[in-house]
Image (cartoon, rainbow, N blue to C red; front, side, top):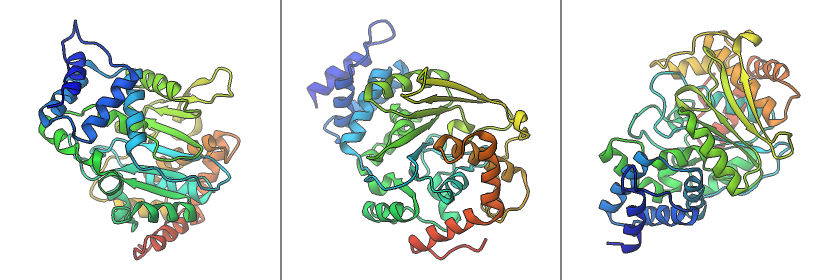
Length: 352
């Protein structure tokens, strides 16, 4: 048993009236001890559930992210006209709405904007469809690549994917605890704000609960992250909704004020509609979007692609982004990027 970890556990697990927040350094130490399993299984499980009940502070989240940076993988900087967009999406996937973020990534990379995603296998508690599985359906398998291969593909195509089971086994070893506890631990929050890239990046994080936005702002500010965004997206993802106002926090250090709250009303741009439900026809429907066929999913892809083209600096405003996103889909440029990725990952391209 680790006596050091026991003292950290005592601080967060003493109850509603006597528990204490960890310092940033203590949170980093606790996370490293869990990832390296120098803490015992009983201690790890107890910490996860106690910290979930207490809820992490912004300073604690900064410490957790410090540990991920210290022990986790990172892709090296690449040369590009725009900063890399790092999308933080819940690892336990989607179960109600159709994900469009892979199409968003193809739109962005076709326009010269690098995109880095990260995720894992089907994971508790939701056990929804994860990003890696959607990419596999489209003909790109990130799950069999070593990190240096991902680095090469990222430099070549501007698209990369860090796959936790292969590239970050220390974090993957924590997944059984999620299965046994039946609750999302603080690691699920860390995954949303982690940036496995060593270059200039725009860190985009999806969220569901409003307090997450504030603790992320504190954590990123403490860690010196220059440009980050929070998106109250579909099922906690970075996908902008169309059936309600999109709530987005944008932090840019040179802006005045540095943090701006964007409230994007889809109806103001002609994109109001019902968010497309997840069905067994997801992959054929995404392929139809890449062929430029009109559908509600196409409108969702344009809505998201246009917004992120604007935020990456590829276009001067939202309207221009929407127009360019539609053009890249209708003219087959996003489909060409998918074929390039399929070839780069040695997977037989799927006809579009």
